[in-house]
Every structure is written in structure tokens, then in C-alpha cells.
Length: 374
Image (tube, rainbow, N blue to C red; front, side, top):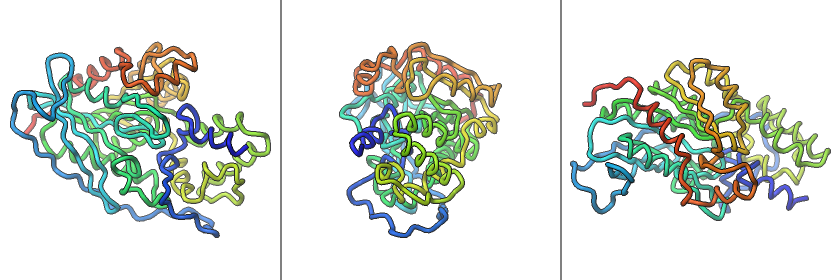
């Protein structure tokens, strides 16, 4: 049974979508307290500050630049968000020649998913978000993508798992958006959220006044509802019942009274505060609050988030454009629903993005109203 639960908690096609914090368990993690408090407190949140990025003068493509198919090359530069707990590291990709361009913030999904869309739980890379950034650069759109706290190069900023909250991630994303707007180099700033990053992006886009928002494979239901649907059919009846009680407690902001050993890896005490803060948000409700141009992009062969989730987002905010990409899966690749091909796509960096997606995203961003650059 323990081996089965470990597989459930580790697969990228199922319960690895638990949470960003749930995927960041590390050897140095502090042991959970023997007697946790009855309620889940929220720590004070200090607003992060973003390091200003200084661009070099225009020049021909050369060392340190990324060749992008088409007319342009892209200039990658490090971007850093300074927070009270450490640095959040990202990559700024700027199209050449330099000029006044739109910009996008790309937010990765759940689990230990890095800025490029890759998970350390898997033995290979798919580079989906890196490809998206490159497609944007080819179309003349700058982008920032970053490792969330506790992930990859930003691991030290989220080393204490028990202190992470969902608001930590939305606050970081909003800080990136505000800085991109303040720099005055960009004609518009769009937030692009993938999977769990979609909900993070919704909250951040509204808080920071983004010019547009794009949901890629984003759920509409509360995360706890999705977890029930994913886990319960795979668990024996007594554990499924325990799972429901744990989720009900976390939904109400309480720590569960009893935690079966088989579910310890998923609901360990140190991750419970994050999950309780996450479960407060219903993506469809947050999406309904957005008053900006909106695009929902969803693949028809996505085995993690199905088409009904995208349709619910559309119902929540009818002004949004809904794009259903035939044959696109969760990592934004053109893949049939056949399980072996699905798994292979999560590990194949040579498989390109679904062409329809890249075209729709760039068209949406270029259609936004443009501000003059300073």
C-alpha cells in the first residue's frame, strides 16, 4: 500500500498536481511538530522587490543569445525577485532588435515544476514553457518566466515549507507584473498561467492591474474537489473516507484530527498550511472577477485538466475567448490521448508546442491596447 501511495503522490499525470509546496519536499526539511496547533495561521506577508533589469545596447546576435526560428533572435537575461526569505530567480527573454514591445509573465504549474515547464519528479524534460517564451520572442514579445519559491534556482526562498501560503505565490507574481509595468519598456503586460499557475495568475493579474490574462490548461474547480476526484477512486474505501475528512478539515482552515500513515506524504503537517490557503480559492470565482481581455486555451487530449474545466471558466466570465486546441495535451504538445504517447510527451524536449496555441497566444497579446514606452 505504501508503494501505491508513493506512486500516486509522484506521478505528473495525477496527484503531483497537489500543490507547489507539496512537491518541494527536500532532505533538509524540518520534521513536523508532534502536536500541531488546531488552526492554520497565516504569516505576515512582506511585499517583495524586483531587481531592475538593465538591457545592453542593440547589437547583432552573438554569444549568450538564443537563436529563435524566423526573423528574430532573443536576448536572455537573469531576473531576480528579492523577498524576505530569499531570491526568486527567473529568465527575461527579450526579442531583438530591442524596442518597445509587449511583455508576458509566464507562471508554471504545480509540484516541483520549474520555469521551463519541467518537473524534477520525471526523468526527462518537455521544455513547454521555454518553448512558449521562445515563440513569444519570435513574435516580438518579451517574457519573464521564473522558478517559484522552493523550486529549482529559487529553492532557498521557500526552504521552510511550513511557512508557504498560496498568497506567497500570488504576491510574488503580482510583484513581477508591477515591476514590468514600472520599467516603462513594455507596451503591455500579460499574465500567462499554466495549470495551477492559472489560478496564481488570475489573482496576481487582478491585484497588479495586468493588461490581459491567459489561462493555459487551468482548472475551474477548487483544488480540493479535483483532489477528491483524483485520489478517491485509487484508494481503498477506508483511505478514501479518511482522504475526504482530511480535505474537509483543510477546506475549513483546520488541521485534520487524524492522518493515516499512508497519506502522510501527501498531507504531511508542514504542507497543510499551504493546502488550506490554496483551498480557499475557487478559480471560476476568481476568473469572474477579472475585468481585462481574457483567453482560455485548453487541449482536448489533456488527461490532467479536461475541457469541462475550460468551459466552466468561460461560463464564469462570458467575455473571455475560449480556444479548444484539438489534440493538445497538458504540456501543450500535439499528442493523442493514448497513455504511452502521453507519458512520452512529458519527457520529450524535441516535441514542439501545438502550433495553434503559439499563434493564438501571440495574436491575443498583440491585439491588446498598447501604451507608449519611455
